[in-house]
Image (cartoon, rainbow, N blue to C red; front, side):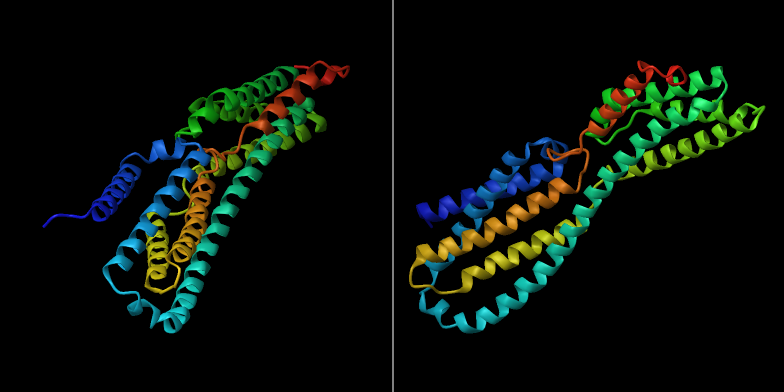
Length: 296
């Protein structure tokens, strides 16, 4: 049996789509590092080619009257199926957006806690104050230069944990001789505790917000909804293809956005270390200011 050119072309599209899916599963790190616009373009073009090619192939194999006769019933079914899929897609999109927003808030809280620790150490004895502030300055600089690049690959800087524990040891082991030192010790340890806890939460947020099974459900639902568009009959086949392409573009674009939002520190839409850079500049300003007690 000799395959027609159209069948061969559609088979080529299927092979390319399958190869892309396998590559995604085997090398997710490269997909994460792909620029958002490039990923959006590739996914949308591939999805539209696959869905429109499938519709064209199906309608070329059967008479058009077989599709037109079921338009009325099919309209009710696609409305129900589309609504159910929209609820699931919307729910997971909100969950990923909240995951991303919470990660951004944690970055702001952590950098603020580091700055507050540096300030609260003002009432500590000179040697302890210098050690705590030195740890906070080193911690902030290592976050920007070391940990942020490591987080893009799912890692973190172990030295940052050592610096926090060193500051806690310095502030917690000395015996205050007056109320001023006692209050400064309590305030400094409180901020260090916040810094430690928020850091752990930030690192845990570096994982994906959507588990593989949820992705499987989303992709399966997207295939069902878009393939259902094939079962309608329209007088103008080009208009029908345009309708299917529009549905495919909307769903594919939303899935790409969902993928970008689920990794707050790894994709092209990742959160940058801007808060930490601002915190470093603030400490430098305090050290170079007129207030002597703000200097290390």
